[in-house]
Image (cartoon, rainbow over all chains, first blue to last red; front, top):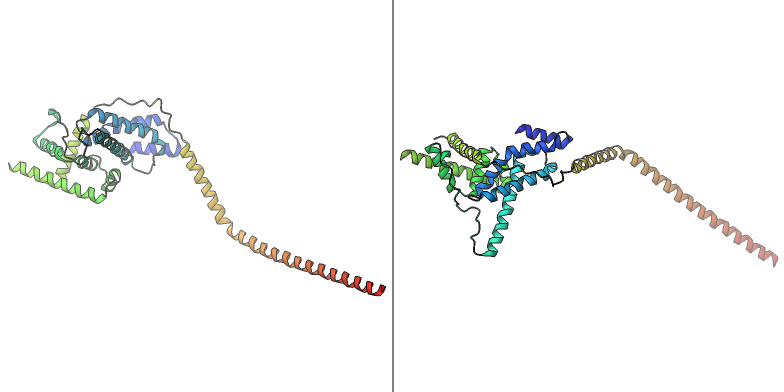
Length: 189
Length: 108
């Protein structure tokens, strides 16, 4: 990951290296993660998630020369993913508002995340976590993903999602506390 | 249960989810022109120009001050010279008029 960032920096500043190869690596490294980030907000819509993921990487490809090499690559890519997703949700809202017969997509509504495959539930604890995650809002799932899986600092998550860092911090604290309580309740039973 | 255990469980959850993601076909953006290097070149040129201007700005002021002081002096000299010339012209004309007057009176 750091290697990609370093080589990308060299490429941007000196023009050394192959852009195609760099993009291939970025694509390989980020595609699953970006798709999951989108899926957390659009559960149960695999085709849309695929399309949006491709759109995100199209943008990454065409904007690669404009990337600021002193900015974190993952923050940059997830910012593009987030903006693409927000644009998509806005367009969808406008369309559904016009049609009036489809419910509008609500950002923070508790939505069904989709059934995880049986084989993925490796243990009881994992099942509790899965169940807990399903009950979180799409935005909270994205925050948890960026913080705990991507390891992105709170301030940068705020920048990606365009919300105050304090809000991100509070939500993380609240999610941790709720999950901890849930685990303890399950253990008592 | 420690906070670190909660964090690990959350990480594991996403780790499984990421591994579950389908392999997307690599998009071949063949029809898309490769991003040009223009922004980088432009940035380099702008940077070089800004650097040159800074160096010029830093090295010139003293010289420019001297030039402007000298210019003021020259202006003053020119202005005083012009005044002197005007005065001489006036004087000459007065002398001419005077001599003409004398000549006219003498002729009478």
